[in-house]
Each structure stands twice: as structure tokens, then as C-alpha cells.
Length: 204
Ligand code: DX5
Ligand code: ZN
Image (cartoon, rainbow, N blue to C red; front, side):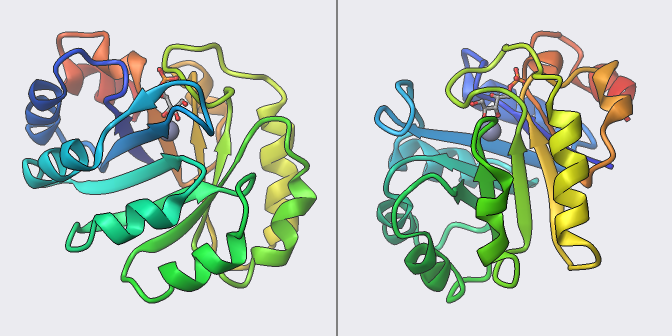
């Protein structure tokens, strides 16, 4: 399994990215929030540009925003590996269409209470499903146990389709053992420690 480190809960993002650059983390996870899709606000266009420029790691961008196309249009030339937005926003088809013109992997995120059947009509068009294991908005929340059932059901739904599964929220060195997915997003378990590499080793 690969690990994607969320820097959302860190005070000094640049310092956190520099620390992660010196670990064997697989991705850096950017939590982008517009204060509307979720009440919290995080990462302006300028900050995303700055943070992307100082890392040598693959960037896993998670857009918790009403209007992902605004960010897409204003972040040309940024080398995201994964561009994930939420299935709960309007115009999902149009956003996918725009993303297909980029080199980004297309990720569709789903909140804990959204019916998983909503994913069905997009399975031919996406590269990744991000299953939220907390309500989006804040780091440091408790993992929602029903996520295990949802992972199982989504796996049955995608069958042998070439779609990566990623889980995000409340993951630590204990519950990660029960997650049979491709990528786990981990924030506070890594960044609340002074020794990021030791935490990543524990997770791996
Ligand atoms: C929550 C974010 C997560 C979160 C992960 O809205 O999408 O990426 O910051 O942090 P932890 O691991 O602290 O839950
Ligand atoms: Zn996230």
C-alpha cells in the first residue's frame, strides 16, 4: 500500500513539506478547501503553486471545493499526479471532460453519507475513488468504522476495472492494518510527531 501524507494540520506547511521531502513517503496530499463546499478554507492558488514548487514528491490534490474548474484553470503548469474532486458537486461530467484533457489521474471523492451507487455512472472515466473516512473539513478526526463496509461494497462495484482506491481521514498505525486499498491518506498521525520517517515506517 502507498501512503499519501496530508499537511493540513501542520502550522508551517513549508517546513512540513521539506521534512516530507526527506522521507520515503509516496505522495504529498494537498487538502484544498473553499470555505463553501466545506466551512474551512485552506490553500490559496498562490500557496498551491508555492508548495508544489518545493517538493520532489508526487502531488495528490484533494479539492473539497464547489468549483474544481476554477482551480484547474488557474493552476496550469502544476504537475499534479492525482486531481481528486467530490462527486457531491454540480457538473461532474463536465469536470471529468476537462480533466481528460490533462495528464492528471482523475479522482472522484465520496463523503461518508453519500450513496455509493452515485459512483456507478462514472466508473469508465475515472482513475481513482477517494473514500472519505471522516466528514471532510478538518484533520485529526476519528475514523468512521462503517468505512470498512463501504470499501468492500465499492470493491464489488468496480470489480476488475482499473480504478485505484484511496481512503482519507483518521488513519493511524492500528486501523491501517484493516484497510485493503491502494493508497491511504494520513495526516495527523504523521505530522503530530517530530519524526515523520518513524511514523511512516510504523504505517508501512
Ligand atoms: C479531511 C482531509 C484529510 C485529513 C487527513 O477533510 O481530507 O486529508 O486532513 O488528516 P487526518 O489523518 O488527521 O485525519
Ligand atoms: Zn484529504
